Image (tube, rainbow, N blue to C red; front, side):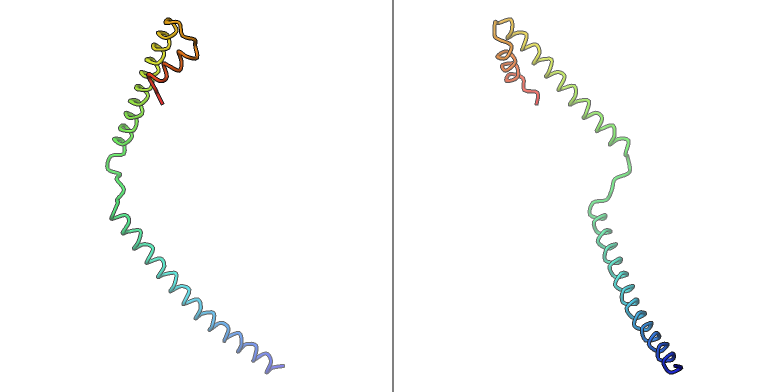
Length: 108
């Protein structure tokens, strides 16, 4: 029984040594992957760095662009409405007048 217990401890020690060797390889591999990943990310960042110098200006530029597009759309819709009224006064049906106004001022 004692030799069996000693044999079990020896096997456990061998398993632990193999486990430690595999763990070292795993940690080394993870470290290499981390180093490679950070190098790639640093290269990408250097090629196209983030620009946080003036975020408010970007916000204002986007807002200005949105307001400009909205104003253009409203202007176009107003022109379409005026053209629709003009074609209706000319005696065209509602469908024909709407089609003509849309073709004359496409707001899409």
